[in-house]
Length: 60
Image 1 (cartoon, rainbow, N blue to C red):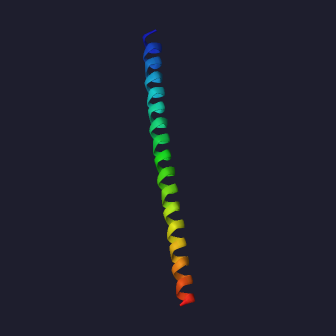
Image 2 (image 1 turned 180 degrees about the vertical axis):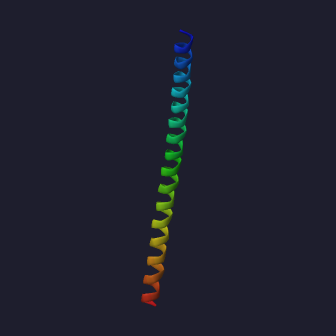
């Protein structure tokens, strides 16, 4: 019976550890998605600016 109890407590701790890892992982994924979305928006803005300057150069 002692062995069974030890295995059971070990399984619970392992399960809690996995939950913590999953929570941390989801947080990092959300942060990465936000930062990548911001990066994409900056790139689009930069592309718009460069295309505008290229048009101005062509007009000049």
